[in-house]
Amino acid sequence: MRILAAMLLLGTSLCAADLDPLIAKFWPEAQTVQDVADQAETDLLTWLKACADKNQFPRTHFDSGVLYEVRDASAKRKKAELTLRGLQRDVDDAGNARYTAVGDDLSKPLSQWPSRYALITFAPENHTDQQAVAFAIWLYLRKSPDKKEQLCGNRALTVVHQRNTELRPLIEAWVLQHDFEGKGTLKVGDIWDDEFRKERRVLITDDAEEKLVKARNTAAQAEFGRINGEYSRERTVTLQQLLTALDAWERDFAATEEFAKRRTDAGKLRTALTKAIADANDLASEGKTAGDEAKEFEGKARKDLARPKWKEAAELFERALAIDSASMLLLTQTANAWLKAADPEYFPTEDRWGCTHEDRIKKHAIGWWDKLAALKPDDTATLLNQGLCYQLTGQVGRANEIYNRIVTLDPTGTNAAEAKRRMQQMKKK
Image (cartoon, rainbow, N blue to C red):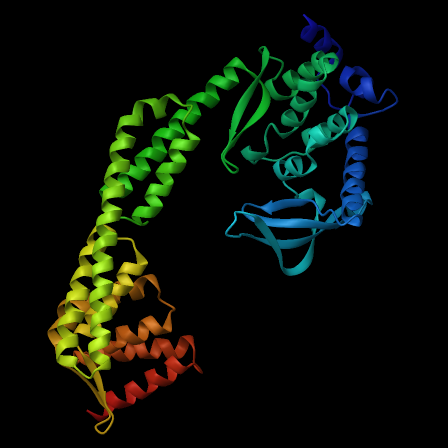
């Protein structure tokens, strides 16, 4: 009944402040809700500037994953903007976060500040009820099609709702009208913030909560399917990345029905991933040992002993890569080892390249370097080795294509100079 009574006073317009009991409670002289929002914006800018003046620069985001600190703010509404400085966050060995400024300061219009970031930065729980309500109204009047921006005003009002029992009927009336078209009964619940991976408290109806629960279960099912599918087929991410994703899935979806249903399957997947990672690491470690031994033999001018060791290393890396197929490190180690196993050598007196085991390049090295170059098409060092594989196997046309690409990518670089020399060498043959 208390919500109904407040709603009868609220009406349906955001422009009739005199009919809105929540507005009238704090701003009895206000003419429109927009007047309240305008003042809230001015107060927000004043607060940001005051923080900056005290060298207490609020941290925020404008884009997902990009961290800034607010260095200044203009309180003139027609030029409402923030001066920002980019930050890089690092964590030391003790687990302490450190922030380092990056790039030049830049200005961004306040209108472009996403509501979800403004909300976290302002933190209504640290302000008075009137300031928090005004800020919430400012959020409500900011229109955005982005679903991540929805319920931001609700979240701000929920803070006041939780700590001030007297205001609850007025807040519930406002939220019910503006978030749920006046239908249903409100309760305090949690919604999942996927970006920051945590629950956020809101005032919500049973129907809306049911839809969110269903969506969370759907998301849990889809994410587990993605992780499991990546493991079962040719992968685009490493085994460790899949294990990290599984950790996140178990943490983020622990409260869902889908998590309960998939718990056994998730356990089996975790066991399989852990074993596969260990197997790949063991093989890679053996491969590194063989490669180190090969380098020692090379240092002693015993290439006859180095070549079989490079072959052993290549085969071990290749087996590890078969297990962890998306590992760029293993791919690079495999390609390098097979090229070394072929024993490429430059003969300065004859100004030419040759190798002892051309078959190892044709059967193994050239394929791995092609794959690596496809993943790193602008890396001239990778292209230089890819080109050498083709040059050593007599495929002059393809080698020239690759060398010319190096020259195009970095005309004055050392790799370009080497590519030009090799093209001249092939012309002499």
